[in-house]
Image (cartoon, rainbow, N blue to C red):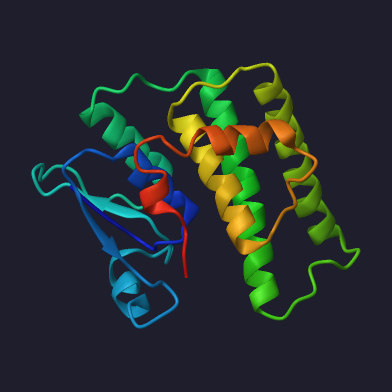
Length: 192
């Protein structure tokens, strides 16, 4: 099994944590650098992660973190996500996508702090998502599973990029602190 992706990508990191302790290869890819032309050749979305399992010729190069998770879960006999878990993952992915878009816009010298509909929607989506998970964590409704991994990665990535202030979210901060000893968490921390 081989996972391709950047060191800092939250979508890649969640899979790296899931695969902690498994026999797999990780190849770091800089999608904004020289490897972009190689990426274009194999992935029309120009996104990461990508995943291949050369031990099974029937499996194509997988091009999306959700599909990759499903494949790994099947291969490792991890139970399928429940509808509640799938909803939570959709919330995490949506918030993550909003933050990625805001980061790319900021890097493109766009002022995302302006009072504009697009920016307001992205901020509102993040606030309501983090409010939802704050309540869920206050009620102790989280186990260490792929949803918790994905949420941890989202929060730590948002902190790493300075995209969201979690000072008013004590349950989230407590959750992050308590997860630091989980396999793969410290080893995969985002870094430039």
